Image (cartoon, rainbow, N blue to C red; front, top):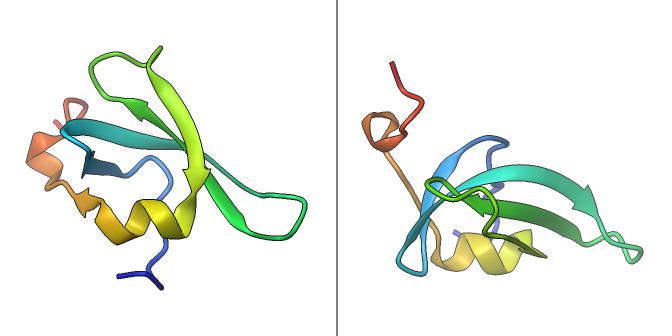
Length: 69
């Protein structure tokens, strides 16, 4: 899914973690970037190219989101 767009506040499985997209922006060259944070530890966060993330990230069903009611 390289052309897919990460959903703001969306939850994904990424590198053995469950993460949430917490920020989106474009770098100085116009490349879409995102910041993700671990759902269980928001202090664990990182930024990366959205395309790189979307190549390996798997969207989580809403029931796996801890904020799902």
